[in-house]
Figure 1 (cartoon, each protein chain N blue to C red):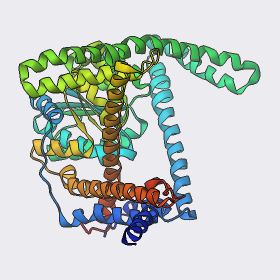
Figure 2 (cartoon, chains in turn blue, red):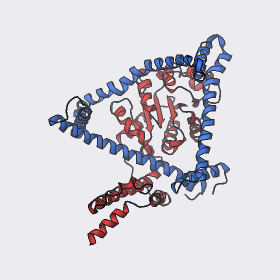
Figure 3 (cartoon, one colour):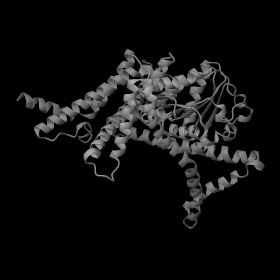
Figure 4 (cartoon, each protein chain N blue to C red):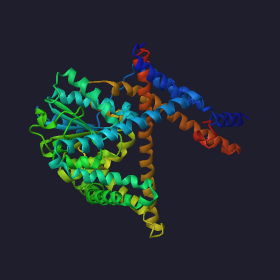
Length: 210
Length: 292
């Protein structure tokens, strides 16, 4: 059994959270509120230190000649607080406008390329690459292409889903079901791992049984 | 008569108290930990791709290692971080570690320190921890221009301009591989911003929930390999012949999955039995107002 007080605190808080599995109780609520409070405090300190101190105050103090443009960024950030005052709330639109426009500028082309263009490319070139690799990869890539088309047809609502379109759309549903099933299986694995991590801690680090 | 009894029994199984299910789950997940049940682990092509990229690195190469996760998913991702860090130090690769999550700082430090101690690595020469930087998207983009300008100081406030490890490494063009161990969508953004814009080669380790979304990036070649959940960690530990938490956890995983499959089958049989008996069923394992 561990002699480290921090291990004991962690173990008792873990058990307090697990107690919810039996029923809602004050011990669980205490642990839950403690988590929220500690997390909020931790994040405020981290954001203030990493964002304001390290990125604004220190660089401007160290080399004001080079880093003076950071003051404009800081001033824009302060304008966000104008929202708290009714007469000045309009000023908060400027930092939001700056942030939205700059983020849209660098996200739209990059995300479009990564999430759409390259993935279309991957689907189209897959059969060609697979043919060189053997029979099984050819079947696999044919299924991939069929799946992409079938699911796209399923989400195409401008034509009534009857006849060949309806059949293809039903194939699309099958692909979606397989996708949801795989996703559910992965989720179960993830949740069991989290449980496993806690057991490893309770039975190993705390009680020393394993 | 016997059929009716069977129907009643099956339909009663759909209203088992949820606490019984929790207890059973506890037992089947904990039991293999005592019995040390080990199962054969086969290496998938995604993990083989990950391993291939790591093995292609040579001594002195620089790697950016992003600890993009927080304590909530530590159980899934820490085994990956530990295994990969161990292998990188074993190969004398120079590691530039960072995190894009505020909670990542407390996670990265023990992993780095324990691997560095094991392999006698010197901070600032063989590895550096740059810490947390706010604005993840801006950080991903700026690292392509200058690592030292993005992180003028490391996690502990030391000047990065004087660090030997960063003397000949200041942007993606000096970095051979980017490893993103990630509990969210950030891997996809590394692929879009660092991979798409700067051509940075990327491999990743992701939570099981996230792994499903990484397949299209792997299939289109934007991610060269990835580890999905604890299974991915177990496969990588097997690939580098360093069995640890991932491999040990596979017994509990299998038992847990089998129990859930059993519940799904019983729940559905009970539902069908109740429907046949004309009572409508309880709605399966999620129904029954707090009862499963």
